[in-house]
Length: 145
Image (cartoon, rainbow, N blue to C red; front, side, top):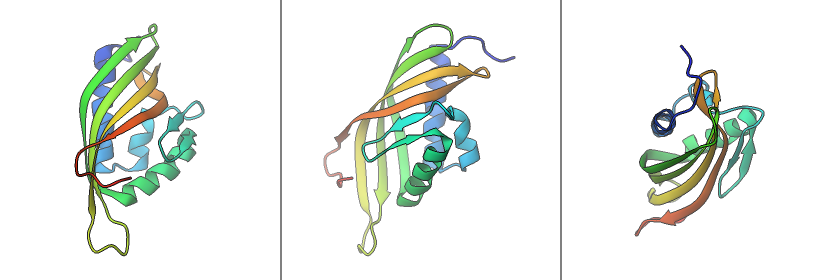
């Protein structure tokens, strides 16, 4: 039976599943259910994308650029706005490697990413409407993005 109200637990589990999918570079059809389509806006430091079509372009780029990715969720603070909407403030540590041809070696990246997600309940599951990377805090020794 589909859930009729968002809960903090549902949101925390969705955040964890999202980052596992990104770490594995899951296929696009397996990632899209985490996101609304028409209402979706994702704000990254390098670009803003809208809808599934915009996300597809961004995702195709990043899964080819970054490898050995590891996201570690440090905190998820949830503010429920009613039974079907919420805001989550997510702090995730992101580490990856990147290789820029023709460099002889890859480079390590490490950042704490402070994010704000606007979430709503759709078909009994939490989905992201707005995803904003608010700030990147680089770890010591990290290459620049």
